[in-house]
Each structure stands twice: as structure tokens, then as C-alpha cells.
Amino acid sequence: MDSVAQKEKKFNRIIAVISILVPVVVAALFGVKIPNVEPLSFLPPIYASVNGLTAFVLIAAVWAIKNGKRDLHQRLMTLCIALSLLFLMMYVAYHMTSDSTTFGGEGVIKYVYYFILITHIILSIGVIPLVLRTYARAYLKKYDEHRALAKYTFPIWLYVAVSGVVVYVMISPYYIN
Image 1 (tube, one colour):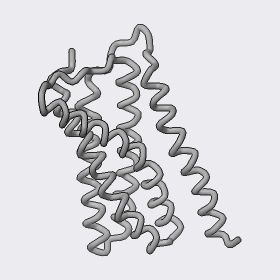
Image 2 (cartoon, one colour; image 1 turned 60 degrees about the vertical axis):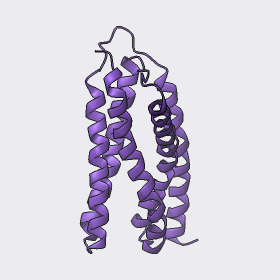
Image 3 (tube, one colour; image 1 turned 135 degrees about the vertical axis):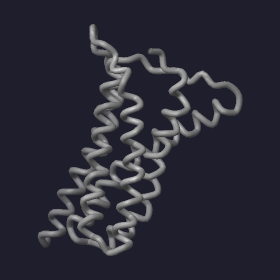
Image 4 (cartoon, helix red, strand yellow; image 1 turned 90 degrees about the horizontal axis):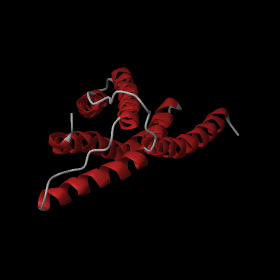
């Protein structure tokens, strides 16, 4: 087995572990409340902004690669991963210190909210291996495979980033300060 194939096999194992571990750990921590800690109620608008910024950086990264700026594209995509990790840390910290907020809208808007929320959650889990595999393909200089996978990864990741902002905007009136 050549070096690239060995690296890819190793990356795929790591990606599989991360793709399972992250949602499981987040779900487990979501149920943990740190006692006697002031709620981090200032975080939701910050992590929603990080989601919005991720969407803009994703679009900028696509623009960069379409204009032949490979190094800029790589730096922007690395920034997107870092922003996603930052979002995740703030999201978990908020939920470990604060009670969940119930959506208070009624009628059709309630169904719209829950549709966006549920698709956001499901796709945010599914995008983890897609992002990591797409990134690994570029790292391994398998650019054709990278491009082919990025055609699916980009719109899903963009939806997750944008829908995170939409969910925040829709639920923000119901936060208790």
C-alpha cells in the first residue's frame, strides 16, 4: 500500500471516530448542568454570529478557489473549521450553564421553526464526516476527489451555518434573561 493510501486509511479511521464521538459527547454534555454557575446567557448571539461568519467565509472560500487562489481557499476553509469548533464550544458551554429555551411561536411559524431546527441538527451531524473527508482529500492532494465531494459538502455546510442563524433569530425573543 502506498503512502497516500495509508494516510487516507488512517484519516478515514480518525474521521469515523470524530464523526461518532462529537455528536455523542455533545449530546451527553447537553444534559449536564454545571451547578452554582452563572448562566452564560450572553453566548447565543455570539455563537449565532460565528455561524453567520462561517457562512460568509464559506462563500469567500468558493470565490477564492473559482478565481485560482488555492492558498487563500485553503486558509479560508481552515478558518471555517476553526469557526465551527468555536461555535460548538460556545454552544455546549451555554447549554451546560443554561436551561433550554422553548420556542413560543404558534401556528405555521412553529412548524417552520421546528423544520429548520430539526434539519439543522441532523445536517450538522452529517456534515462532520463530509467536511473532514473533503478537507482530507485536499490535504492528500486528491483534488479531483476533493472537488467531487465538495459539491455536496459546501451546500450542506452552508445550510447548517445559515440555518443556525435563522434558528437563533426565531428563538431569541423567547430567551429569558
